[in-house]
Length: 420
Image (cartoon, rainbow, N blue to C red; front, side, top):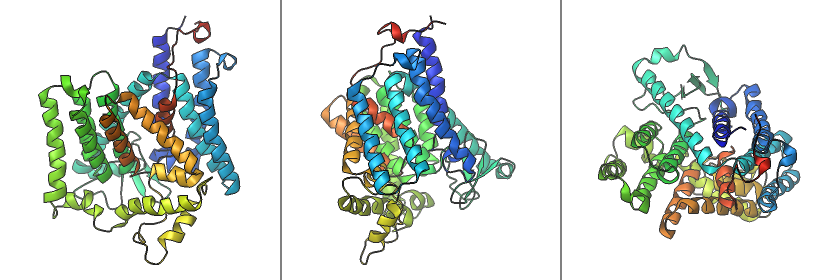
């Protein structure tokens, strides 16, 4: 008989593969070479069918939980109708559907503790790779020229050794070289790091200070405003949480020191390059900041005009109407929506967005020890989602775990057991 421990190891390896081939990565998400973009779709299909087969032994033994399945079908129904009404590109529809179904399949067939331990392992590897790349970029930048080159869909050159990458333009040779890890953009890496810190502090049995420090150092080199602020809010939540009651004063002091440093940078270092690159853009009116503001305010205007089924993936055309209108406060923010919650609501309607938010809220509720902590953690997630737009399965893993009614038990019945 294959024991549950062996199943967990196999599943953990698969989860790491899913993360490393996600559409949130540079190589498989925004690569100019279109062939690479098919890999996460293929991997998703394998995961969708492979996980239930691994768990149950065959698809014929899969037990359907209609309450859980109903939510998935509602998500897909809203996507399908929106795609038909808005003449969605077929490949785009398939890609986004696969991400949601994979998120559901993971939730349905993988215990939370197994998934998040695998997520933590993946982020440790990515963070170490990112710091190695940063070391090379600062000390031996000429070595980067000999690494594989990847151009993204915006035609930006990246140097990579797969475990991490650094983009060339306006980055190398500067005082503050931003790291992206394996992801398409430093801001995306920063959000993943914030989620990894959340996993360490609120999900795993006990936080490992060395791992948290690794994540915080990697986060520092993203120079991401959203990442810094979200991480500070997360650390503050943990300090006042019942979970930290048994934690050493040393660790609490470290977290408080980090928050204080962030505040000092944001308030008292206005003439420094670090302030300019990280916090100055909040009020400078630059495109980086106004794109975030535009995503919220102009995105909400699009939602109010198309509340039922949204506008599909054609949101840029609708955003342009408001962004280019006379007197718009965020007219230089661009047409792209860089907010995950607003983005899905604009694309597929209010009901889709509400389900997404409810699932996320219920997810953080699982790990919150009080109502205040639940609210604070939810705010952290909203802050994190406000900086980037994620199309991968990961946000839906949180949603479906939040909406899940029953935890997996490998020994529940004979259909869940395997013979070797």
